[in-house]
Amino acid sequence: MGKPVIKRLKQLKWVDFLSIIGVVLSLILILFAWRGGIFESREQFVRYVHQFGNYSILIFVSLQIMQLFLPFLPSAITVTAGVVLYGPIVGNIYNYIGISTGSIIAFLLVRRYGEPLLHKLVSEKRIDKYKGKLENKKKFERFFKTVIFTPFVPDNVVCYLAGLSNMSIKKVVTVILLGKPLSIVLYSLGWTTVLELIGIL
Image 1 (tube, one colour):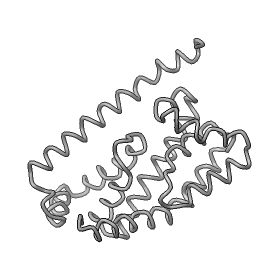
Image 2 (cartoon, one colour; image 1 turned 45 degrees about the horizontal axis):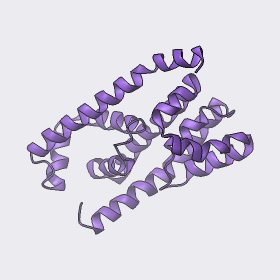
Image 3 (cartoon, rainbow, N blue to C red; image 1 turned 135 degrees about the vertical axis):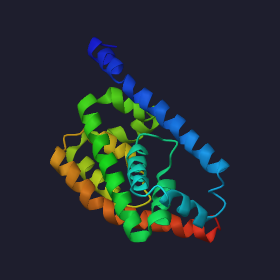
Image 4 (cartoon, rainbow, N blue to C red; image 1 turned 30 degrees about the vertical axis):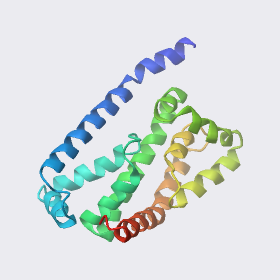
């Protein structure tokens, strides 16, 4: 392993640190929420969160940004929470702001730190599955656009990989901003419907 790679890996210790903080904070929030009984009903959960006022919005959007870097936090849960807490219109606006911001940050970070960061965020198996698509610029662009515009398709890895591609920052950001609205709405409403049908919501 060359010195530049080792140096970059040392620079990325903050990724591990943030991941640990994210796990600890999530566990603490879940513990307090559970002990407070806010999961006993949908109404009680909404009422509990709304008592924090605008801070609840800031926390929610921040959580949507962080979920791109925390694999244990499924987007199906966070986007559904947005609809439950703030309604289908406002909730999906917050979903869009958080997820789009997180996707752009993910892309920019990998563009800045390269493969060492990619290997910290994604398993080798998933990298091997998609990395071959980078070999052809036009094919990767079509693949990237298809994934971003399609709901129910995990696009976190593709946003990371875009950082290693030849796509310009302007093009990647434009695709994310234009492609996310419809896919997020369909994704969130789809999961909300499923959870309502099985009696969880």
